[in-house]
Image (cartoon, rainbow, N blue to C red; front, side, top):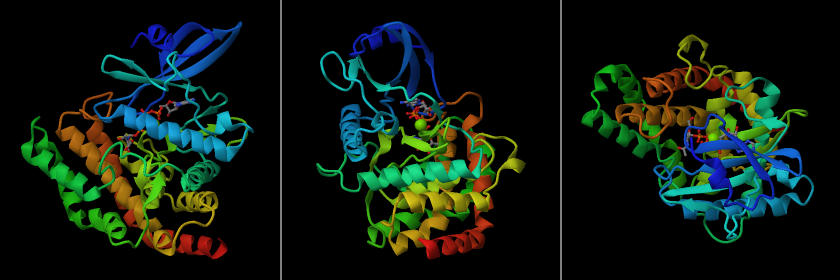
Amino acid sequence: MHDLEAISSNFLIPADFQSAEPYGSGHINDTYAVRFSQAGTGVRYIFQRINHHVFPDPVALMRNIERVCAHSRSKLGGLDASRQTLTLIPTRDLRNWHVDGEDHWRCYLFIENARTYDAIRSLDQATEAARAFGRFQGMLADLPGGRLSETIPDFHHTRKRFENLVRAFEADAHGRAGAVAEEMAFIREREADTDIIIDALESGRIPERITHNDTKLNNVMIDDATGEGICVIDLDTVMPGTALNDFGDMIRTATNPAREDSRDLSEIRMRPEYFEAIARGYLEGASGFLTESEIELLPVSGKLMTLEVGIRFLTDFLEGDIYFKTQRDGHNLDRCRSQLRLVESIEGQMDDMKQRLDSLTAVF
Ligand code: ADP
Ligand code: GN1
Ligand code: MG
């Protein structure tokens, strides 16, 4: 726990500190909900310490976020913009982040009366989340000011993720390789899949776009009253990418009824009606900018993103749990196993997904 009273005193918040608590279930940053009294009324702000092991250049990252927030705000107009896009609170020296030794801190308005979900609850929620991510991509299509910085190079280079896994397995620095033979075999059988998106991008078959790159369900805030997907959050990885990574990660996180780290593999599955709900929302939100080649690859993208994240969880398990936050022994291995189970489930339903997508694209 950090001293949030001291940290928050560096930001231009005209209110009195009351309390702070760790918040949310993100795997990367340290997030706190901090409560203040503002002229007698309780208000909350979100404070985040940027994980500088994961993001080696926090200043470049914050410059990206400044541009993305300002552009989204200009697109939304005045009406309710502070609920539909993240709003950075400046520091007393008028920057959008505070440096404390090695740490970089930022502060956002707390979006109240809305929440994120770690596991999907309904078909409507899936459509709403996907629509929000689709709209977000649409808003950023004409972002001025040149290419965004790559906050993590090769973030979705699935082939390189595979190679890192093989290296970690061979090095076996923590003596865990013996426990993962089955998982390694499963992933090696699918090695060729790791090239599909990268090849499509490099050959020019699909375009580079500004994408979110971390479209898991709990990175979109859902309004408590209306159920609408109101605000896309967790903007650290907004950078050049492909629409397929964004769509695929929604399939990974919003078709499966179970949580990402569930140990009960029997409850893990891709539900095709949820695939359809996500595709509908995304196609509506992305309002016609997707190319035919992108649409063709949508069904397989869910499998590829799930495989990629499974590879990353297994790599981290082998490397001693240094990247993703963990709450128990074997947590990353449990997460990997659930992802691989989901890959299998998706593989068994490719035809069903394609048919559903065909019926939808006939309408759009
Ligand atoms: P991480 O990169 O660690 O995943 P996130 O930026 O996703 O961090 O934040 C973690 C959680 O904090 C989110 O899932 C969400 O529940 C909550 N959160 C983040 N930003 C806000 C905000 N501006 N208002 C309300 N809740 C927020
Ligand atoms: C991390 O930050 P969070 O929890 O939203 C990770 C994603 C993974 C995800 C798996 C910067 O997302 O890439 O897909 O965990 N973010 C980063 O749950 O690595
Ligand atoms: Mg997050």
